[in-house]
Image 1 (spheres, rainbow, N blue to C red):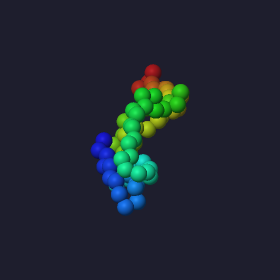
Image 2: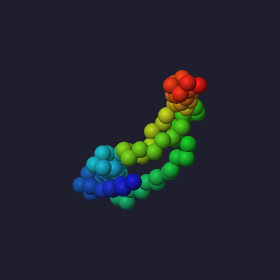
Image 3: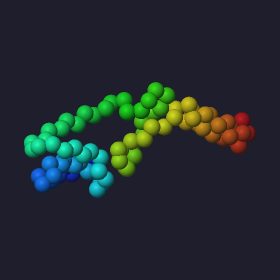
Amino acid sequence: MTFVVDYDANYDVIRVLHDDVLIYKDTGISPITFKVNCIRDRCPPGYCECKTDEYPGYCCSDCASNTKQIHDMRTALKVKNGG
């Protein structure tokens, strides 16, 4: 992912943008420092992480719902194939 960081000295504002969407903003006297932490487990328990092209680069999918859908598709395939 590409981020753009800009600092407006007139207002002491730092902004971080991704695809022109503001994702972080802070004010303070220069120099402003900030730290970015990567979160390994971004989804709550019972959800799995799926990569996407849109920000933030992932989504959380309900594992139980996905399991049921796969089971239902498998059952439908068996019926369709005469099994």
